[in-house]
Image 1 (cartoon, rainbow, N blue to C red):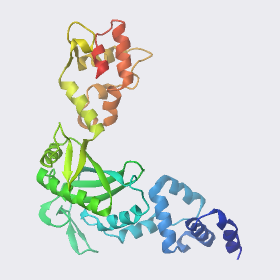
Image 2 (image 1 turned 90 degrees about the vertical axis):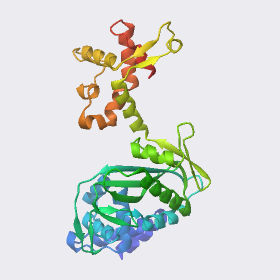
Image 3 (image 1 turned 180 degrees about the vertical axis):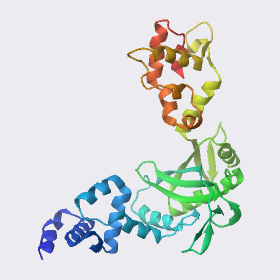
Image 4 (image 1 turned 45 degrees about the vertical axis):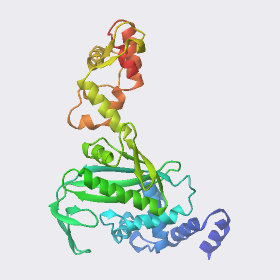
Length: 336
């Protein structure tokens, strides 16, 4: 009775979900961890908290009796997300879209692939062998070593949701990627989403697939179902590509751009020479730069942070200051 009286007193300042969570906490506060019992609504609310912030949920578990992660994970294991476009996800999206305005429905369709280890295992629940190529509607006998993921992300409102994935042997071929893109764009539009752009990196297969869909440099638009969708390349990947090209090639500027009578050339060697001079100083100009920034190899070449730091305004301003004192003629880098 005391718990019911307390919840009635605070019901005016809490919504139904908050009251339900408090009742569950009060009900299980005197129980041992293995003796706590939670209904389905309590578990779903706790699962929402866990997905919103796992670290915050772990902290709340120290203060309040909440469902364990194993309990919540058991709920997720009951839902099978097969390869291809997920009907479960789009069903939930359609339910959420009913509460969204047209502005909040504007989103981007992002896709990228990663390398995965080759592995084959038997799924007892589905009575099938997993690990082969799987396109959602068809499977092959080849063992997959890449995974391709599609995700939608809101533009005006902060939300994101993975909507499809595929298992593939090797990098996705351009014609197959065109098929997946058409399926994804069509399903998104049928669900009520307004996909205004696609985002991907500059992999050779991605570039070719976008060209097959009609996106070219002068007109980077996909015409799908009489709607134009902008094809955007991932800015962090563009930054890495700019750094990698600058490592190999010099950049020459027209004299009028540099207010000079002769053409001015920016070289990676300019940054390298100033870095070598700077790292011997007690108080450094480029305190964040190290050898991995100037000679990236292996995994360092894939890190966006290294490319962003070496191509930053701070480095440009430092180069400008050094050049103005005659240490190195490298001011052309400032305009990059």
